[in-house]
Length: 318
Image (cartoon, rainbow, N blue to C red; front, side, top):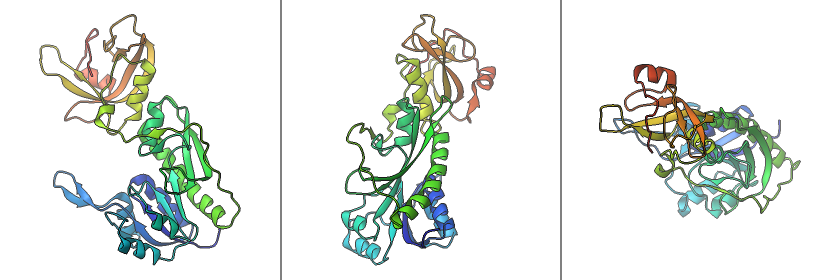
């Protein structure tokens, strides 16, 4: 193992917990864990700490949850930690230059894409939604730009037709936890040279919004399939179905699918069989394999149609 380093860890969601745990297991001194402030959650709107905050406290680490790092007192408190490095994983706050400059070795960010593709907030979802066949994790040195710093090391993983945002998140969490201690050690001992990101191939992973969720059946089957898997399990793509004899459409959350077969010339959104094969705009079709209706849990399409048949020739809408 490399020499024990004094580190500040900065992260918030579950994917960051894996990296923090790996750094602790590697024997580094975690001077402090920074995370987003607790927020109201659940029906009772109880203040709930982030996964990183909860894990750090449970393991006896000092935790700080500033709303911003722009104030001089926050920057002074960070500098006073006398850090070798800071490791950042989906923290959620902008790091001012004074924060970036404070650690001796700088700030190392674990980003869930192969840069410069998918800089920004939602690289996991956007990679699947775009139909990418591969993604990964980059260990990069942070600068003032948005995920623009030089890369130390990368780890890659395939995106298959069975990949969802949920399964890819878990795989990238594993890769990040494996990569972070190695990249940090090699950067500290000088055995690795940062590589500037290519100028070509830059894309931005804009934050997922409500506009990304409705399924447009006029789009090609492959695109619809990637949308459904890229938004599963959260926030979920959806369509609407009006049960026979009723007037009010029911919103269906679509959680898993596969591009399968041809539409036979049917109009986009038409259900083609009794197992939820749906026509798309390019003459192809998508089979819905897992879905959820309001007030119910996720279920396979076979279980769903056994209890709530959706007849062939039914039209699904956005």
